[in-house]
Length: 239
Ligand SMILES: Nc1cc(-c2ccc3ccn(Cc4ccc(CN5CCCCC5)cc4)c3c2)n[nH]1
Image (tube, rainbow, N blue to C red; front, side):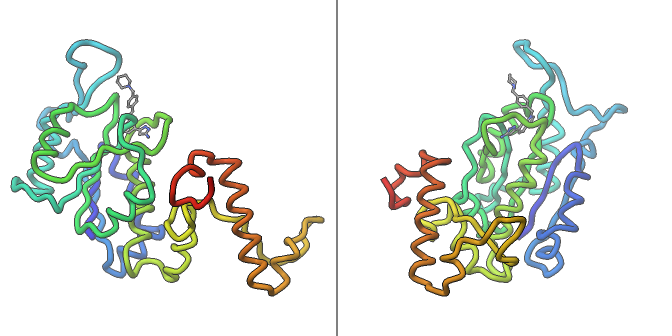
């Protein structure tokens, strides 16, 4: 899988060389390329923004640098197998199933906007050429797309076959199908007693049936408490 990042702050992606994703890059599962959008400007100030047509606060990213960067990084041929991701507050909420779908992509290009966003014609052009995803991380506003791109990268790459040492652990995670769409149960390890707090006895009983039942009950309780929106979904198994 090749991952490209277009940003005016490409150094944001240096962190990928030291993290989990870095290991995938080393064993050849993932190829990371970060690019400075200003490399595709031609004026002395390397300008990437301008005032919004129709007025309004802030600045908008000009389309020209993006188009030239696309030509060089992706090419001028249409190819639906290339996934181009534009993080945006107005995007579709990013989910574990979207991460799972993207984990089989051969090529993902992250377009990280800044200011108030990117000229919409950039997105329209990209849609005419590749498979575009405008995604939101959640209902809060970041200063740009870089942090979202890092989060999406981590969610996707950890699902790439061969990346995770123990793929079974993926099945038991929150939001994964294997967990019936429930939040995961609380985790404990040694010492059994810590600052007056003890591991629940059932987990030390060695009784696998009771342990599974306790874990399920805890997942149902937590999901009802924190994510009532998940309790109505068919996959949750609780109503
Ligand atoms: N989930 C999530 C993703 C992002 C995200 C992703 C990408 C960019 C690129 C720029 N920003 C900053 C920003 C600030 C304010 C607005 C709203 N503003 C309202 C009035 C009309 C103009 C736009 C939009 C963008 C970004 C923010 N934040 N949160």
